[in-house]
Image 1 (tube, rainbow, N blue to C red):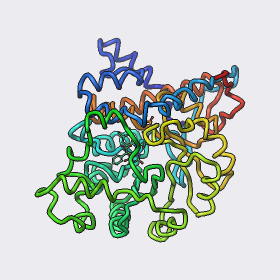
Image 2 (cartoon, protein in one colour; image 1 turned 90 degrees about the vertical axis):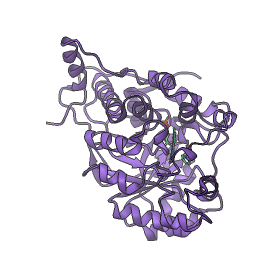
Image 3 (spheres, protein in one colour; image 1 turned 120 degrees about the horizontal axis):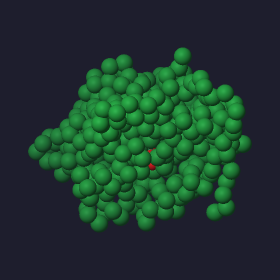
Image 4 (spheres, rainbow, N blue to C red; image 1 turned 180 degrees about the vertical axis):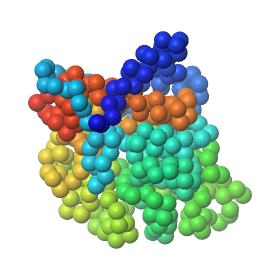
Length: 389
Ligand SMILES: Cc1cc2nc3c(=O)[nH]c(=O)nc-3n(C[C@H](O)[C@H](O)[C@H](O)COP(=O)(O)O)c2cc1C
Ligand SMILES: O=C(O)C(=O)c1ccccc1
């Protein structure tokens, strides 16, 4: 019998009988404010922040909120199974942790703690190439947990090749190539404080530990950290890249490749033609293009263009179990979540991230059941209604 994620609800009530309550709120939308009280405006401004005046981040929420579930009754939802197949793997639920860089600004245990939480709950962890911890250390913390690697496709071929070789050797199976960040978006919250997180982890970070990256520096990182950060900002991504360049990645990576940050159906078609395995419909949580289409509004057309050629994943704005339901009903196979787990980490390390995963999936399991479904693959557009804008 499949695990019922909703059992977390009983567990909480039962613990209540011995006088204990959860350490963190079960409404995850409250985590940002709590994290800001704990860690201050610099780090939380960076995590919470988005491009421009925040219009895309707001649109992401509005597009999910505008869609309403129309629950169905009397459909035998007693036995449920949340597992889904994604990129040839069976996942226990349609959820993975999105790549989030420089997590040391949230918690000293940073990415390894988040990765351990994901592994403990059986959820895949997508490690950011801009991790504050070398990828081998994160992989080592995960046991046999499913690990996927996010690539910022650097200007320097040697650095990209080095990252791919290291990721393969460290047991990362799928490659997520982020396309929406050839340049960093205009982020007023960080600009007004001149807050760039990389100096905070220059001694430890994945990039700064890379031999090919270090070979490009005039002085060792420790001697001139500012120069190392400048070098990083100038080369971690490459605005000159075009679709034919993908051939290099296809040649240098044997496993599944997923393009992260696809919003236009024609780009989904190009992705399929380029022979990749999937796309993440995402606007980077609203952090890149202000005024852009909400991710949930872009999703149905991408799903249609992808047909059965691509696995379509979704992120940007997922905060609750019903958001997951809506994304699946709009055609996503599974979703990624970013900021909520970064706050969970900031508030309570590994346990905080596990709390976020368990709340999201318990609420999703209940939403699924209460809406008349037993499997995450059956919700469809027919389960949703759309309110007027
Ligand atoms: C602090 C922060 C750092 C991020 N770093 C990366 C990154 O290194 N690579 C990447 O592909 N996406 C990165 N993202 C984007 C996330 O992977 C994801 O697309 C986004 O957070 C999803 O939206 P959500 O936060 O609303 O769930 C980052 C997001 C945040 C909030
Ligand atoms: O802040 C981000 O959204 C992001 O993607 C990023 C980019 C470079 C380094 C670290 C994170």
